[in-house]
Image: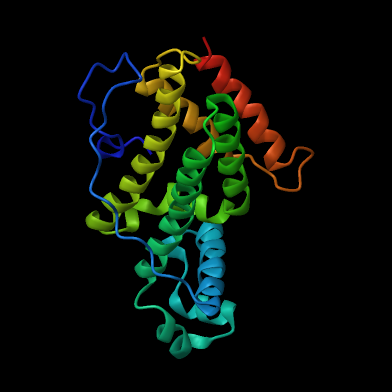
Length: 219
């Protein structure tokens, strides 16, 4: 997702990873999902990923969940409401996990490895949601689209902070923010080929990707 407002605004040169990033306006967090709503989101994500947002009707979602149209509308207000929650819930979890890793791990190398594993585990567990987010974000209203992009910027800022900490400790070298975007793209676009039942599990891929990141930033 390389839209112009996807990136944080830099105040210093793009050549230095220690650039100060202005923080985007926080996105509205998705509502806390009940077990029934969680089931609806999972079913809708699978349908949207397979057939596209415009190719799935509310009746089909109701039938697939076993709720029917009337009961379904008790839990959702619109099909776009579902799309928004699908595209934001996993990102909100990523941000929460990333902040917890920032707070709990001070070693820059181990922190990078933990961030890498956590990201790949989330991608592996939410392949349908990832597919929907990257392919169907255009179906959201402009305000909600900005909110999704803001979450992605917030998550990138976690990695930027972690790498900046490593730079301050003399363990990492500065890299341009465009390189960081490319490194994170390596993770996010794995939804196109990742097979949770494949020979390598998400944790192993996360470890391999962490080595790619560390080779790019280590002094």
